[in-house]
Length: 148
Image (cartoon, rainbow, N blue to C red; front, side, top):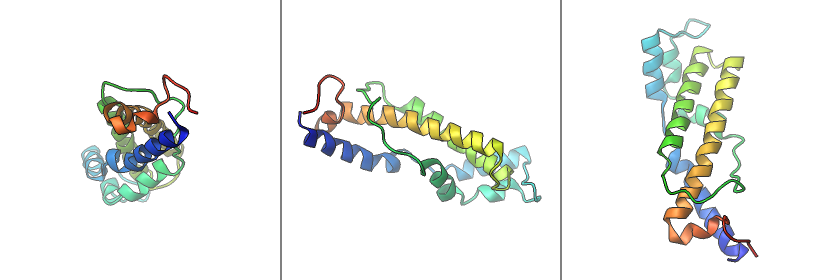
C-alpha cells in the first residue's frame, strides 16, 4: 500500500468524523437540570443555560482534538458503546457547566477532561470501524503491513 492511498483514506475518514458522531444534547441536559432543580451560582435556573449551549460545549470538547492514527486498528463490533460514552460525557459536561454558571470550576475541568477522553476513545473505534466496513477506506489502517 502506498502512503498516498493511506493518507487519502485517512482524510476521508477524518472529514466525516465530527459530523457523524456529534449530537446536540442540550435539550436532555436542560431536562436533567430542571428535574434536579439545579441553579447556577447567580440564581439562574441551570436548565436555561443548557438550551442553546451545543456549539459552545462542542467547541470546548473538540478544541484540542487531533486525530491520532497510532492506536487505530480494524474494528468489527461497531461503535455504539463508545458513542454512548461520549454522548453521556458531553451531557455531564453540559449539566456541570450550566450548574457552575459557565465558570471554569474544578468540576467543569474534570467533566471536560472526561468528555475529551471519551472523544479520543470514540475516535479510535470509529475510525477503525470505518476502515473495516468500507473497502475504499481499508487502506487507512496499517495494522498488518508497513506503509511505503
